[in-house]
Length: 534
Image 1 (tube, one colour):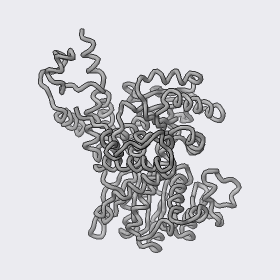
Image 2 (image 1 turned 60 degrees about the horizontal axis):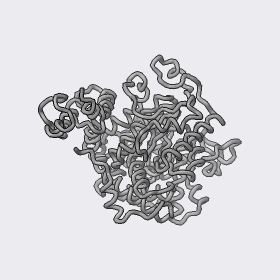
Image 3 (image 1 turned 90 degrees about the horizontal axis):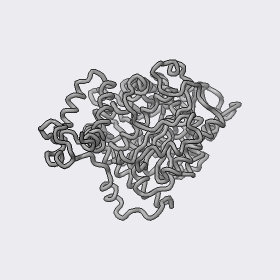
Image 4 (image 1 turned 180 degrees about the vertical axis):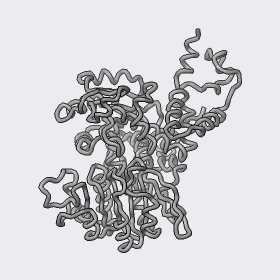
């Protein structure tokens, strides 16, 4: 038996399947292991597409694509890159939510690194089992998966999906990518009682034990993969904020829920100023939600307004936040630290009352609660703004604070709308409105690519603002005229390359490079984007 030939075919990174030429088959010991006809990669892509499009549901397509990724990685990425508009909603939001919920029952083979609380004291040695040149890690503990909550180890679908987008949308080499699940248990009793559940069947570890375990992991990453970018993903708000603050100055790290969401939302707001004719510094912003995503947006918007001449206090005063108790005000007995700078000097009131008193130009939902943006809210904003900005950013689609159709109908087509998950175009007043999808995939892949290729040592706010400015500048006037605040997904690799350049140049300005920025950095980025073609 020719083990070499079988090993080549069983490795998704080296396998070309029926595309191996007759000469390659002879040289590699593949003769007789494949049908005699030699296919082109495009024929393989077409065959896979034909099968994918026969699937009855998006989750069936997700499972089929996952199997393809483990069989022939380059065909998988060729499909994603060439058909990103069709399959991004399959490999990520909204389908990835269902994929995480069904992760245990659909588990076939491993695709990532699982580090459980039982591995404490041995994490660095465990990481050595991953025999790759790792440059990019996406890690979650599964506690706040999209708007679905605590899914425990089933949340592994998120790091897997995010890394697929890093590769497809920006061109990060998949050989450098590592998805990680930190399994500290789950408080989801339904998951713990599921006979197929693959994680620790115990309540979540918290407090000092949790902090020590995560710290052991971070120190192990620094030791084992010193050149890697570590992305924290879908941690609960308290942990997300704490971990980012603790480690952002220790290693190259990033929290997409806080920083990526902030940058993509800022880009949308920058694009929206081309419709309402205002500057950010002259606008007022009201947030539904006061978690890490909402305050992350607020922090970055405030920094952008300071660039336009406001003080930090003036910028913060142009924003108000609402949580489950209503408007976050200074007179509250207890205010979480991350929202404290934005506490309003107003009386306690409901979100609707705050909307009517504060009269914002932009209403931004980041709660995971569907229907929270009401008809009365949108109608009031429309009465006070020619072009009210309405962002419903929660994922998946079912958790969006309002639909695109509702926002446009309630505003008689005047709203400037964006969402976290995709919505169909809306026909209104004899015209067409194209809702922009403020998907973090517009930011994090290019940000990561730029940080890695430039040799950045840290990620700071200036890099995020530079990424947002670049993204906003890529929205054509045609898109703006349709009410769309983001460029078409089919342009995302080109956009990501430009973001990568802006991020690298920002890192250079801020003295955050290990050495010098590579010469002709724009060409350098394009030359180093992963191409899955044979």
